[in-house]
Image (cartoon, rainbow, N blue to C red; front, side, top):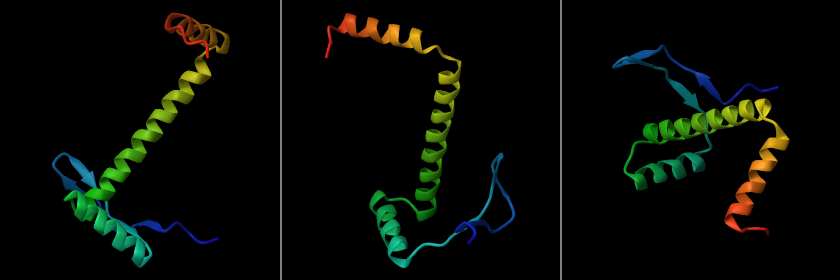
Length: 94
């Protein structure tokens, strides 16, 4: 089974009070060209574009984890009752 196409490629560097790591990403030439065009369109570097992608993916993951933790602690009957109250208050019986 082939390994992941993203690999650790260098030692950590300090940027202010944070550490940075290097990644090597293998992309098809056409994908690279399209992503470079997107970065240029946004007026940012390709590196910054990937930082934004990573930040968005991490935020989505954090949100999912918080949801799953709350769902595991919650009570379905109570949740449905609250939704019913919201429907009653909005007049949406739909």
